[in-house]
Image (cartoon, rainbow, N blue to C red; front, side, top):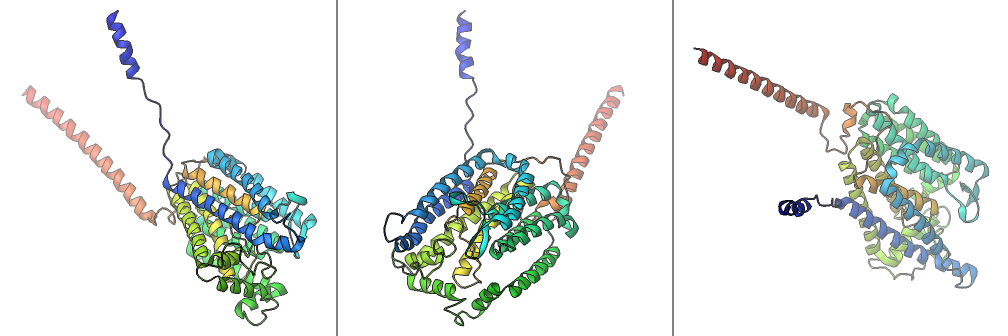
Length: 446
């Protein structure tokens, strides 16, 4: 009895300890930190950029925080979406990709028929506080569709014919967006899709042909539309029509120049008071430059640099091809949009009306971007989404643009060398063992 009692505590001591949760990778923390900092900074700047205009329009302080309240409300909804997507949203979103793409195309068609016109553009559908911008959902849906298509059949990316389904769907969406009209969003989609194809291993020659075709169409669209042509000429000759087509670009430069290095102080900007049209949306970078100076602009660029580093590092470490392509595409989507906005406000590109992600006011843009961040965070945590049907490994499946540029030939030589060494070593060892046994028996019989 005493021996049995002694064994019982021993068994209790040998009980397996509880598994500890695996620590999150640094990319996850960097990405989350950059996103939350940009969101907080954006809420402050939206209030600063919009409150003065609201006070001057209404003649009182009662409604000065109108855009701030809406930003906080939809930001909370977006953060909830981001959290759910970061936990277990990758597999769900991959199954729902065809539905999301179909809904996006339907809404792009519907907005042309029953959409709400604002400043000469019909980009929103709905009414009151429930207006949505279908093009924002379409941006994310196209990256999801491309990642799923190219991950299931990696060989598609090695030819223009294989990429044609993805290119045709993208072209159809861009055409519908151009009819709104919204050339800026169409440009963001084109650059993001190009980055997705590069991540999947598309050949430079094919990408060059696609770029020539898109460039020719974009130039044609700019020439045949008077307001686009005016924006292009105002970019090429900024002082030619400073009070007309070049007014917005000129005021943005005045705001950036007056801010200097440290700015005029938060809330002390002057250009946002009717000099900068839409100061709280696509021109919020000019408000940042005027009130916080070069220091503020540098901080914003630094946060986006952190976001880009963490996103591309996550793509490199992803466990499957779908995760690699998806994260590379979604990260590029955010970075392309930020780059176009910063370049346009600083006079390095024509104005396109593209907002600054996380910072500019825009409910649909904010929620779509936070959904993309949630999916990236899911991959950073080690999440995967298995394809509906298994794909055959091919040369295109190596994702050389992300995996460090190792050539397929080198990979094949390494794997074949390893197989030869394994086969040779195993065969030689077996033959040696048989010779030793036979020799031992001969010596014993002799």
